[in-house]
Length: 246
Image 1: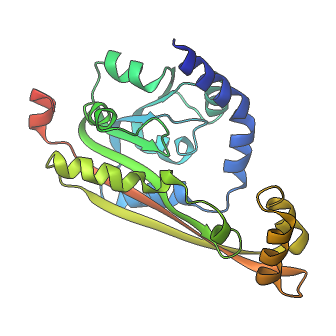
Image 2: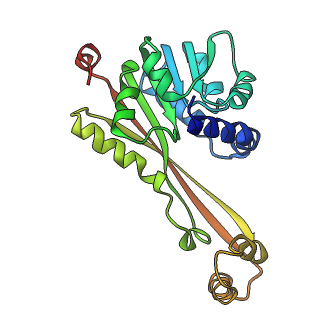
């Protein structure tokens, strides 16, 4: 394993508990709504399912009942330990990095799925992802994550644009695809002090004072509405690609 992969594994091992806590605290039912959508579209049930970069198994709990053989692959041993608590006899947890797994694995799955995958960036990585499937490919990402108070003063996360990159790649490959969006909103009161502490160090004291005054006026707290949108890209891999390669 390269130094880069070792560092990456260490990062996710150390972040695993916090990551799982964040997932558990999430109020957005994306896993359940994704399951219901896949059932409605008759993509589920299926015989074989690959959850690539599956982490602590956020989607495992809701999807495994509809899969005869569910393989979850992740680089982090600590993530897989958390996923094991959600596992069953039909689930296989595989510790491996994405590139090695896809290059070594000979099995082709009915569905290849990946959500918020940080290792799915290039056209070559997308091709490797596609070739692991003999039927369907599913890619799920957040495409909108913004709120009224903080987002105007933060840089746009470039990962929010990855789905558009995937679509461009698929268009180049002449593979038709479908999309489904899952949109959520949430509102909460944000204290003025918390807002100032959040941006402490990001702006000079004078700039922060102006921003705070503009945002809160003379109020000590303000309602903040968050908008979160997931987009699923799903497409059928043509048999000709499986037989002859991309």
